Length: 296
Ligand SMILES: [Zn+2]
Ligand SMILES: [Zn+2]
Ligand SMILES: [Zn+2]
Image (cartoon, protein in one colour):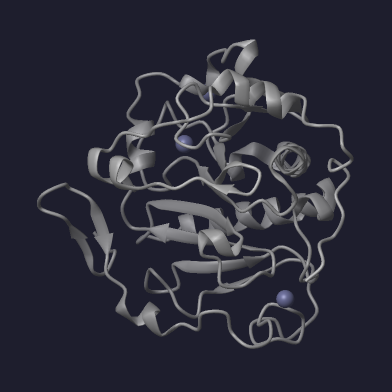
């Protein structure tokens, strides 16, 4: 185990990394450090990566990925091609960090919006390179066969495009969660190849545009990738995918996770998954499908 300060709660088995130094990080810093010329981006850039100044994991294993020099951008505003540049950088950092001896799992994620705790609005994601295989991917990987290669059923499919599909899970933890996966069995971003990675840029725009049409522009969300562990081992169930979870259950209404979810470990979903898929398939036609850059 190489993850400093990893603790396992004796009662529940929950894994906790204690990071007291992160308490000192600024909560909404003055001026944007991610805009070109800012603290973390002194030179012009299209996409950029750098070590997190307030890392949750040591030894350069927590990075920040900047998606665009434009402070007010988003995947839908970037469009497919420029979103694909972000996917390419996720892939390159997966390969680079995954080649390290002290790394067994590269976890890419985005927390978007203040509601979910993002301290900087500038479009960015993060990469954590764990020494361990974290428990949720480990649980998914323990399946004997690949569940993502099964037909999910028409009523859960939201959309298919560019070699990818987006479905609402049969048992979603979040009401409008989407599971986005390549339609062929590919273990990770580096193995996907440039064409399929470019397709993910297109699919991200598509899925987020549908989500925003249904739940409102700039809906706060979480996005995370699951892929093959980077250490040794055979992982037949490793099928690259993304979980996209808006943190609203209706326009303007926050979905809270609380005592039942944390204390009982059971999620309660107030929206029927087939209904969620139908709504995401055919979002309201009030013009919100056309993305406009947001105003500050
Ligand atoms: Zn900025
Ligand atoms: Zn598969
Ligand atoms: Zn997963």
